[in-house]
Length: 149
Ligand code: FES
Ligand code: FES
Image 1 (tube, rainbow, N blue to C red):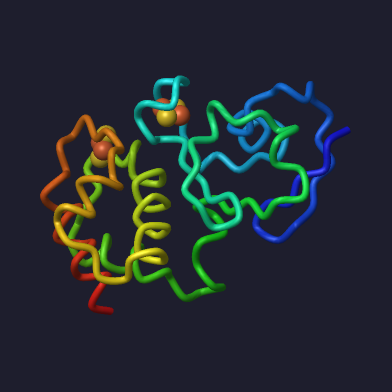
Image 2: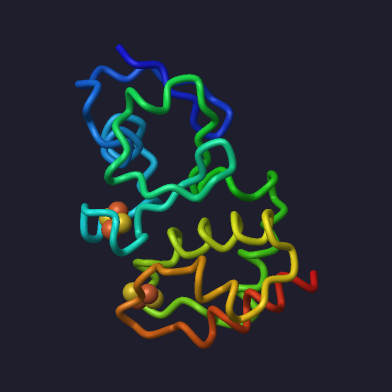
């Protein structure tokens, strides 16, 4: 049994210690907002926060995150109050199909925590998530909007 703390709740997960965190989150814990894209840390669809840092959960074994604070898209808002990145996303109509967007939002939330006023270069360096719908311009605008919120 591996004990994980996700969105401030503890879960005892019956899985091999090498199981990728993404699968424990989705299959054992039942939080399906975090998506599977590539499985090789390239696309960012599976991004969650581990102790506040954006992390691609498809390549992170659950044994490596015991005792750490894991936050998924379901835990980003504070009760009924959306996180400023979620609010900016809504106001800019960023999502198209939406598949990549929870990972994108988690990556951006971590960036803004580290760099509250990121430049375009900061955004290009930090947000390497892939969006097959091509929402990159809307993402950039929404990041700047969230940075002003
Ligand atoms: S599914 Fe994890 S980076 Fe693509
Ligand atoms: S919104 Fe469709 S993949 Fe990004």
